[in-house]
Image 1 (cartoon, rainbow, N blue to C red):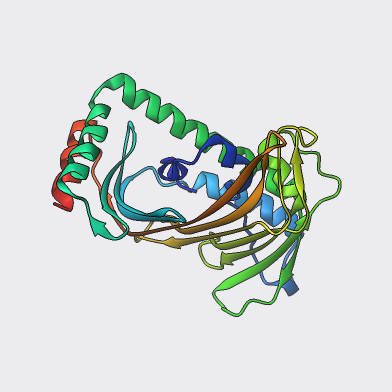
Image 2 (cartoon, helix red, strand yellow; image 1 turned 90 degrees about the vertical axis):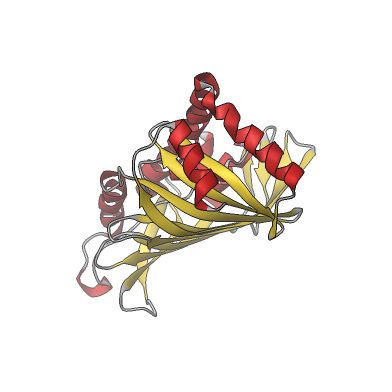
Length: 277
């Protein structure tokens, strides 16, 4: 995925890290003429990291959860990603809501607060990279039939010999996945992952994810040279610390990507105010 810490705009709690960070995998050639599938997966993981776009972008984001919908305008900067809320439940903000949201993002003019935000975004990115690097070893994959000639279909199940090096990669032990790959660009276009068995963390003391959890991720070429996430859908149930119920249900969509110049925090805030005012 993108080198601009694309995952940060989801801003999910740390408890979700074990179940949503399956953001990269790939393959290469047609089934009848391809070399080892997992070796292609390993090469494609390297390609995803190597081809990360170093530019800066603005885009729209709509996050839907059971309690409501939030729509934001996002912009990436050298300091991190900044977002301005535009609507709650698809309705414009009231004057008081607008004031509160502007106060929230204005606090990022404090360099220390922006550094803290960037640090959390970097931690999210590092969690994703741990998942990314583990995929070729965590899965055993085979080629399937794709309904689109522009894509390759990869069907993956857990490798029983895989020993997860961290909590993030433990979720892969109980997940099967279907991955679609763009033939020309060798980039991910779709990942569907399903938990076919319960996954526990810390022998069940830290938490567990129940069978039936589901993740859907789509990625597209959103500009002439830039690939990015266009949808992430999550449905997971489980428990934290043995007793606290865990329910994750959200659908996040992103669109209207456009390249922007490198901006300071102040310039980015001005851009956000003017772009959708």
